[in-house]
Length: 356
Image 1: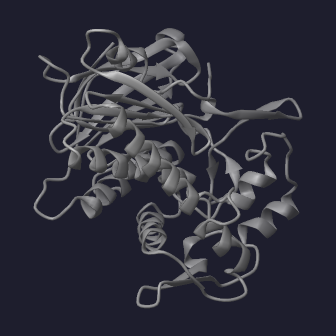
Image 2 (image 1 turned 60 degrees about the vertical axis):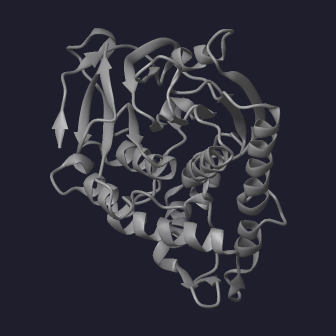
């Protein structure tokens, strides 16, 4: 793993503005070669920047809506809702798509030592991070909920596509991988339709770009300060690929005079603040979303030689391809301007060049 020099800055929050900021949005301006299309789905604003046509955008949004119908835990007829309702009492037959996401989530859970865990929905609810109604669970409630988390409590039979939970109270929330998965599927659909270049922006956390803007050799991207939408943490010249960001300032609640970010450490059930933010470039948005969540919880521990970041990148790199990932880690620093310092790390060939 290689790394570059640090930079520094200040931070505040918003829900819908992409973590990859206004420079990539500028590609929707007249003369850029791209048209901007948007839709509300998966609980956030989703933006397409396309050099295709309206039919391509509609096909992409139809794909997004179909994925939401199958995977959203908030829709009662989805595979995930059905599993969450019945999975503790009997095996539930699910679609191959959900089965594959569960398999990948189990692998990520194992490789990150439990830092990535889609079974933390009840813990999120306990802290008020689902309906954003702040509360602080007591120690007995946390202990009870911790007994119901862990992908080892999710059993699946690939031959019958049956999934079940080994104890009551277990449920799945695929939010930390679902947006990235949807972005990957939409990009594939559009490339198959002949759309040579474009970008998908899903809320603050996920950006995926393919091809290149006309007469440019990279995508120009700003990484926003997680705590301040009007400030820039750093600028990237990004290769085609996905950019995923995790930050506690994206969404937070206040309870008993304290602010709590929306990322829970599944290992102890507490809101985490190991670092200030993590932004990851990968070829696949689903991998980037998983990695950014794990890195936000584990910090530099994940970047050790043969650490979980490297293991996960290698495990999810398709056969015949070289493992690659690039990481911006932002941490508090009393000696830096604004109290925040960033540093870039690379696994394999860099996916971006970063500068202040």
